[in-house]
Figure 1 (cartoon, helix red, strand yellow):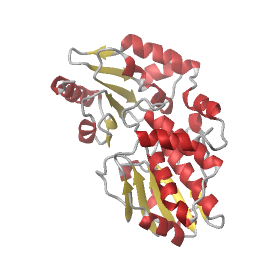
Figure 2 (tube, rainbow, N blue to C red; figure 1 turned 90 degrees about the horizontal axis):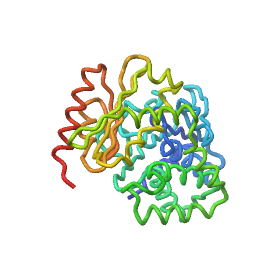
Figure 3 (spheres, rainbow, N blue to C red; figure 1 turned 90 degrees about the vertical axis):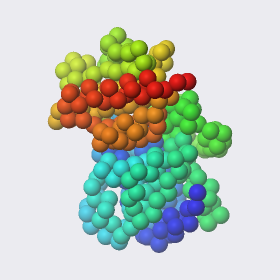
Figure 4 (cartoon, rainbow, N blue to C red; figure 1 turned 180 degrees about the horizontal axis):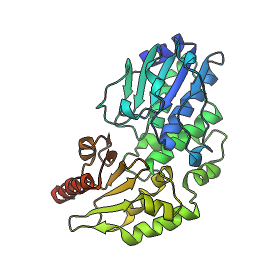
Length: 316
């Protein structure tokens, strides 16, 4: 990947503000925070900020800055790990001097003055390490904080190196990152430790999921169910992989009812392509991991139909 324009844009701006997607995961925060520490370590005099709504379950990774609109004047804005402009957290991303997109999702929404998109990368955090290796000869410096965040982002988006997106390069980068001084055990605990409420809801999911003859599985988590188990919307992201180990499931969907009655759709697959389905319902993502949203339970049935058809058509 050619990072010339990206490196030059960072060099040319004294203020850099880094965004990522709403409802962040470890890769969103890892790439966002890792890039911030990388730039700060390389350019101590630059003002670098990270913005977005906080997820209490992930503040152990890094906490966001609070800045006024005035900070965006003549600023470089970089958005990490966000395929669609509509999903960028903090709508001020477009009032800076220049906008850059860094992502590993399919480049359907081509926003930004510069785009560094690599769909072969395991994660956006892996791309940030690519950037570091590219720019080392220009004085870029890695530190322990950046290494911790980039490693955490890679771990999170590869499912601890289990997902097919994990490559030889991914393992090589991980091997290099762990030479820095950070507590890997604490990092894993922070990402994967499970609250009792989440564990009980996991049990409910395993007892109540539906499985069709095609290998398509679904679970519906209404507001009433979430309230019963005292689990909030943001915490449900920890549960989407629960069905991945169940024999016979080719693809699955979580339907999660939000406070405004919008229904969030989380799609996962072991083979059938699902991001094309997500694209039909205000979403997108990877072929094997995607998300969308619908405005009624009637629309949910259409998503289920489409997912079932994808499983019927798929052969191993």
